[in-house]
Image (cartoon, rainbow, N blue to C red):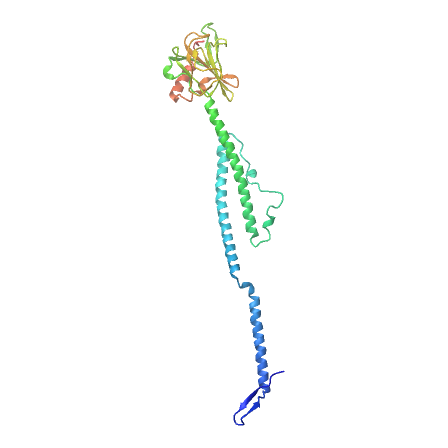
Length: 325
């Protein structure tokens, strides 16, 4: 029930009851109704725009998300660069290193193989940026696998290079007697006249004429397998096992400078020229074996002869003269 209101009438010096007009009541009602409608509309506008109103925490999370997207973009650019570098290394690996060391190239399918089987990225699904995160994770995993494959390949190449270096050091590649110590290159590999029987027979080595006591050097790295005079015709002689199927023999020595089982390097002094055994004069009889077969030693003098010296030696070695043993 509404309160009754009064006002003071100065003419009658008494309080009189305020009578509200019907039109005023209607106006107040209309204004109240309009106010309620406007208030509801404002509340409605606030409600429908509430998702666009960001709290400080939401703003911070949004900045963090934007920064994360930027970092993923930068990560993808770095992976592009890494993939390009890795592709270049793989190309050199297959077409240069492995060709040089006679190794089989790594198939492209093995280098770029992904990961089969179960879904490795299930926990990354269902987010706003799931595709970006999953694709980046996949690329990173594949790149990591490619690096592992390439790393193992380079380890293999390094092992092959070390073995190749050992092979090159082991091959009997120098003349066992220095040029300045030679009187002459008496006889080469091939048919020669035997100095004792005068019959024509095959001479399996090369004879280097030098004074007695001239130093004899190992023609490659290896282990002395013999240093004795028990082989028929060779007199005091040395055999060096170079590995990889190579062996060298130094015969008719005056004396030894090594013993059986000793490891020697190319160029080490191993003995001295003599004329022991079946020999007509002081000289070094030198032979080279590959897989148990005698081969022409002249093909292995690239280590210490100039092209001119090699050509001259080859010319003399081809002369069918008399050997010294």
